[in-house]
Image 1 (cartoon, helix red, strand yellow):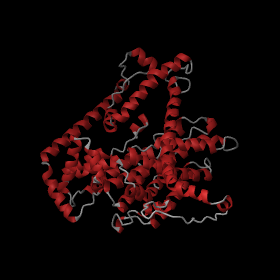
Image 2: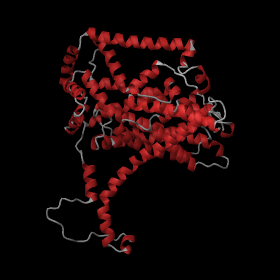
Image 3: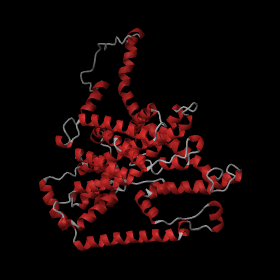
Image 4: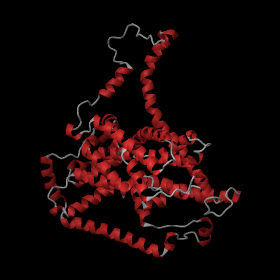
Amino acid sequence: MYFGLQTGWVSGMAMPSALIGFAYFKVVARTLKLPFTPVENVLVQSVAGSVGTMPLGCGFVGVIPALNYLLTEEENGPLDISLWRLIIWSVGICFFGVVFAVPLRKEMIIREKLKFPSGTATALLIRVLHGDEKSKTMVARETNDDESEGEEESQGLFVEEHDLRPSLDDQVEGQEQDEDLVDDGEWKAKIQLLLISFAGSALYTVVSYFVPQLHDIPIFGLPLATKWLWTLNPSPAYVGQGIIMGPATTLHMLLGAIIGWGVLSPLAKHKGWAPGPVSDWTNGSKGWIVWISLAIMLADSLVSLGWLLFRPLITIARLYYPTAKETFQTHTWKELFTLNITRKQRYTPLNSTTESPIAAIKKHLAQDQEPDAPPEHLISNRTTIIGLITSLTLCVIAVHISFPSLIPLRLTLLSLVLALFLSIMGVRALGETDLNPVSGISKLTQLFFALVTPTSGPGAKNAVIINLVAGAISESAALQAGDLLQDLNAVGAVLRADYWECGGRGAVGARL
């Protein structure tokens, strides 16, 4: 949460959590009555990741600070929410995204076989840690030859590596392999290295608290640091986060910092667009470049998420187009308007393999009707429907307790409908690109609510509050649904345990 308030970026850190959890339980393995299997390892990383991302899911790194610090009196602000209302708000919005992800699993993971790269990588790491020889071979092969990845995917190896459910024989064999995997001295050395890194980071944080100049080192000189805020904060937290995020994201962030603070900020000051001090959010370039960044992110969200929305529609349209074209050509307008549509008899080639669009869709939906997991591990439709209705009702109640007389009921319901719809787009993006665009989803909701929220009348003062809360609800739904499907992709098909565990860890994270 501290890192999120500083940067606006929160990471679940699934792989580090899995590695640290395995290292800890490896040390205390002799004191455990039950074996530490891959499923327990997934549970450890799921709990750690979900609790870690809950500040973002509950809006504590964006919406809640904005309500408290950025609202003016004309907008019914600043809004100081009490602790018990924050707890109710957090618990209210931390469930419905999890429940809604359950019916998405069959389509996203089983039928479409989306990769969910982080979940796949975490599953592979856990199998390697627990002594799976095939996974070790895959890791070595990927390291030695990058081109082999496509071949492995075509052979379905990624599907095999997802199933982390051990049978009784697998557990016994896994224990024997785990005992022979590494000696205790090697693991103690790794734990020692981990503790040294932790101690070094903690020491720097404590020292920088008493020496705040370490947060703003003028690497380009004192004049540039004073006038243009060109300073460096060498925080170990940023270094660690950059290691996890990788160069693809961090290089884009570096490019944005250079363009924003090295080009746009001096340009706005020179042209008189932001005449105040650079650090001034109202009249300075610090506040001016925020609008540029918001425009860029909103445009990116509209294009990328819009494509995710229209691509399935285009696929379905291609299936229906031949039938629709034939219907329009062989029927009169009167028959079309009265729905008096019958398929005309005509000759068809004997060897034709073309199937009708409806048959193609039915065939797609009928795929994998065989149970992909034991019935006792699956969530029934009845449980899903009851859970979804209950969680949505809880969310409505929590919103109106946390923000009494500020948000109309109809707008709360509208925000929930948008949240469920946009979470599908977020989950699909996560499965394909390993990036859940929760920020873009939130901004799309805010853009829509800017059009439907009344700007005149008695409720006009609450327009900004309504806008922010609606964005937080959509962001939370997309984040929770993505987290659960990422975990389900890693663990295989142990669905019921992970479902209840995900809801429980969400409630714990919300209260924390």
